[in-house]
Amino acid sequence: MEHMTQLLDIMKSLRDPENGCPWDIEQNFSTIAPYTLEEAYEVADAIARNEMGDLCSELGDLLFQVVYHSQLADEQGFFNFKDVTEKINEKLLHRHPHVFGNVEITDAKSQSIAWEEFKRQERSENQADTGSDLSSDAGLLDGINRAMPALARAQKLQSRAATVGFDWRDTQLVLDKIKEELAEVEEEINSDVRNTEKIADEIGDLIFTCVNLARHFQIDAESALRKTNEKFEKRFGFIERTLTEQGSSLNEATLEVMDKLWDEAKTR
Image 1 (cartoon, helix red, strand yellow):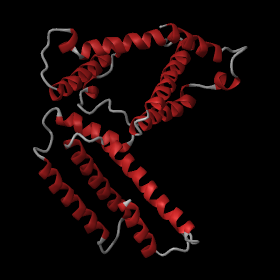
Image 2 (cartoon, one colour; image 1 turned 60 degrees about the vertical axis):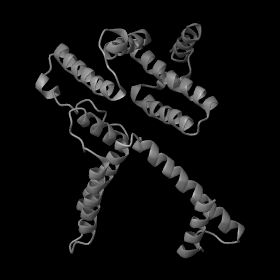
Image 3 (cartoon, rainbow, N blue to C red; image 1 turned 135 degrees about the horizontal axis):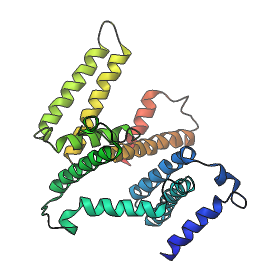
Image 4 (cartoon, rainbow, N blue to C red; image 1 turned 90 degrees about the vertical axis):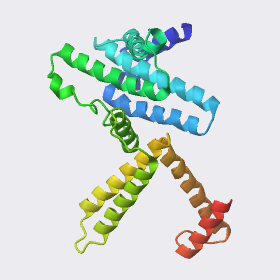
């Protein structure tokens, strides 16, 4: 608690109009938001690399982002850090009645369904408190952040729809759907009049269905693609280094040569 108080005091000092940091004084919610996203990704990266020392440091950076936004809100009279912690405490207590109440939930799947129902109730209550039209907030998919990465949001949309049974019964049906979507991509590509927008639409459907396959195996699609990106970087880097060692370059090498080095990188 002592360290948390110190962090809050540091944040106030950084934002002090007279003696604070000139850069920090100029910031607002919009200018800090990109850093918040960046820090969240760095936390995910440290976890992917299994670097616990880095994870400890990155979690501190992410915590500072929460403190930063809370300080900005406090200065404008909206809320403060204490309000933030009270909100999350209330939310966790409300969404875990099987831990802090007398409700019985036996497995993780049941808890996920219950969690989404709690969130839906909270959204309806918030609409009622603000006097908004409840009918506009009745949708199951409402409230899923549109700023999320597309893969992560697709998986979130699918997971929430699945809580009411809107889901494939088994993975084979998902595989069949992937084949169907791939055929539609090929059909658009091979069309006499090629339409880029239609091709993009069909590719989007294919990717969305692939995300569904990942979800059925409890695989996070965003993390899976991130790992594939890293794998591609390593293998392509091997090609580039090997060509340099051979006195050649990427611009000089043929596709056949690069393919051969790619296969070698895979075996390594």
